[in-house]
Image 1 (cartoon, rainbow, N blue to C red):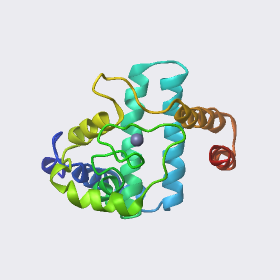
Image 2: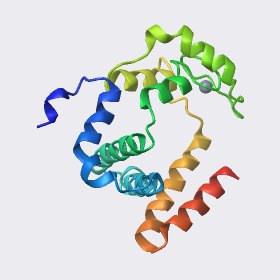
Image 3: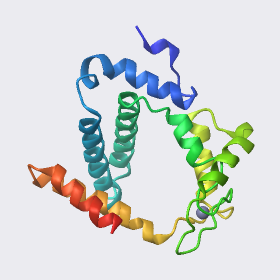
Length: 188
Ligand SMILES: [Zn+2]
């Protein structure tokens, strides 16, 4: 039995190890990183249907868990340290405006990688541990003290792309081509 080392308040990294123990030997070991990524994109698309089309919180919640599990599978496959990756990008501040509570305006500033690296070191004491603490950190970066959402509306485009991907992966036998097209459209 492996599950005993794991619990809800464990560090984020432990969640990745837990999914590795559950799935990796039997299911994910034979899949390429690209296959896992494709599955992650499909689950993402299907989840967005519950969030943005049918407004079904129960379905959205279930898919959020699946997205996280597949993201962990990808991290395992490419041996990515999920905590380091998150902290280097979000060291308790928004990577663009570098503020602890995002104050981004349109168009958002370019990312200053050197400054971000410095902040990751300076703020090391504040680095979250558990999944819950990471969630609290993101909530405080992207929501102002009033609880008002500060993410610019243009980022809704991302959600739309994933919603389209979900529809396409249901309809099409060649979802990958469509996903690539959607991504190309997003970045243009
Ligand atoms: Zn910002």
